Length: 506
Image 1: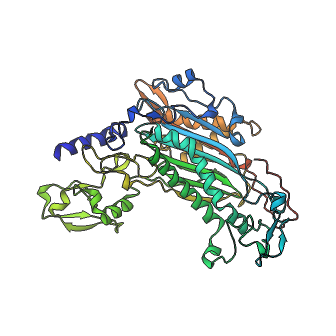
Image 2 (image 1 turned 60 degrees about the vertical axis):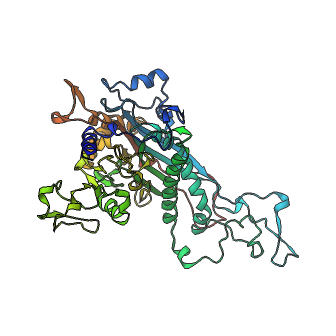
Image 3 (image 1 turned 90 degrees about the vertical axis):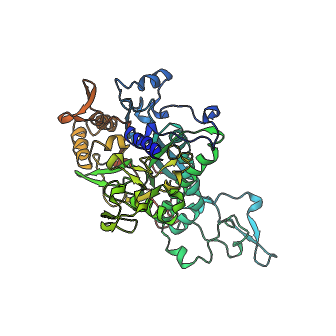
């Protein structure tokens, strides 16, 4: 056991790249077909040669889209590979707009009549058509960053498929969303079970259902989509080569709200009027200590009698037995004293501090996708039960105020935030934007490039340094700079008869 944990400590000191993934359960992944070949985001429009050049760890070129029109609202994007931490850039990104079509479609002529409750007299249902809806298509704008680790497989799969799962989960509840917005036409009294609404009846709604808001439904759709994405990876990992895991940060503009769903340590920050509004929480082993400890407390078998759910300010040794030492458990935010017992000599569930904190002395993330076969080094202890794909979702009302051309949403991977604060980001945004005319559509791309350049720093000797000769980020860095003024909230109106079926200019 001692030798094993010597190796574990070496893994913690060496970072996530030195962590082995146990492959006995899922077969040898090297023999499996690759699900998605390594690539950079489509909107960059890189050639194969350019992808190869972008992985130069010595020069670390900053990449921006060749055409800004490939991104919604001419949003800015920039990325750079790490300084040798991993072979490839394990960050991935996606930006796409899609339409949600309400479930009520124009019936065929033969479907315009259904039986009434008595099943003897047909009832005309001509009013159940899309022309009676206030809008035919609901636009959604989606931005996402995926920070991969121990391989590119999970990040590539999430980049390609998560938006599909988000769309499917939104479609599951779009009828209820429209109903709550007053945008569905009334049902015929005789069409409760036989009309095209039969799959989603809205009669007899309970008080609990009535109290559920549109925000609740969209947040639930995002949460369910994240869980389904992780399940999708779990199902296919024995068929395709999907190595590693990834965190995920999604910004979804839907109707009149911005929804930010975060599972990991990427971060979303709104810069407005010279201030910052943090739209996500950084989930780390330290910030999620109580959740992890509570799971270890409820299911001690997951710890295999080799880890303890208790937290001590330092490693406990045999010489400490019988002495009093500060500790805390899952129910405690503060510290108290206890007498050290032999069982306290086990490794702590959360081992290390700060960026070196690790779950079961193995992995430095607590939320995201993948890592289904990851185990503690040289053991049968699974890590996955302590990791969750469920995101925290925060909501921002896009109609609460008027946004200027200098108001932006910054999405950044942890490679950026490791060396930059929210306050510093505000300064960088304001300083960068004032150099570019407000009518310049490329100003947000240049902003993203400036942010990445600051975090990457300059190569001085053999080290990357930022301002003040401080250590720059050696990690992959990815930035979206999204102009908030370009978002046009959906005009829902108050009357079906007065609405048009046009799609807002997004």
